[in-house]
Amino acid sequence: MELEKFVESNDILSAPESLRLRMRKDGYLFFRGLLPRDEVLDLRGRILALCQEAGWIKPGTDVMEGITDHDPIAEGEPAHLPVYAKVQQLEAFHRMKLHPNMQQVMRDYFDEEVFALPNTIARSAFPRDNERATQPHQDWLYIQGSTDTISCWVPLGDVPEEVGGLMLLPGSHKSGFLVPHPAPGPGGNAVDLDPSWRWTGTDYRAGDVLCFPSLTVHAARPNLTPDRLRLSMDFRYVGVSHSVAESNLLPHFHWCGSPFTWDDLDPDWEDPSLRRYWERVPDMKTCKHERRVYSNG
Ligand SMILES: O=C(O)CCC(=O)C(=O)O
View 1 (cartoon, helix red, strand yellow):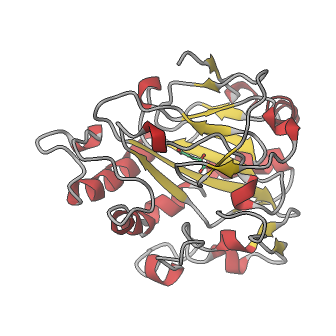
View 2 (cartoon, protein in one colour):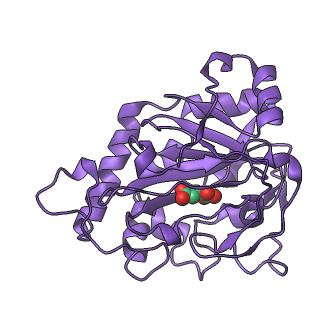
């Protein structure tokens, strides 16, 4: 699928008003190399080592290539959960979202101190499984709280177009909240699309970051390779004057019986400032996560 290309925003990194104007107009900001490539690749290596341990990596191949000959495993399946629990235990995985470069952009954008939501997500999208890829959706359904919450999507490694990665619909954030309907894939919901919207994406490189507000419609691009795993992570930021739904203070998968709690994840983390940092944020504005209306999230 031929896509329009993201506008890169590195040239306005130190111009907060321009960042806000572009986000308001386009519904996204894309930065090349915002995070250090070596740190992103180090995290990729740690996650792929766990995939290899689980038998997901083709024997005899370079583990960093992420080549799989395994049958596709979807998020939440029994074979996924033990690997995912180990990924969630990685200190480097949770530290990535707090990188100073990330915090600086978010502080500039919000024009105040910012808060990184503890709920942090890792994705391992298998090839040969596109019918279960992430469908077009808005994050607000799952994240709630302030609609100004910014989602940050980070490829864990180079993600060329044929490996997939995230694509989005510029301008879709102006449509307000779109009522979702059930669909396969992570999150279990999709929204209907306006025919005037154009899918936009890129050839991602390790270190790139895509930021967008929680009403921008986005989806996974199909993984067209026969054998490459697509690894990525996503996390969210708000300015401290914005509200955060309480659910985001829990680890990912909190809605499906909390297969892991912070007590399972952080005991071995070395950096004391990373452990339960949200408990030391003064006057955080929290709100309830409304689950009665929506089946998932
Ligand atoms: O990486 C993906 O496939 C989906 C990421 C995403 O859309 C999300 O977490 O909201």
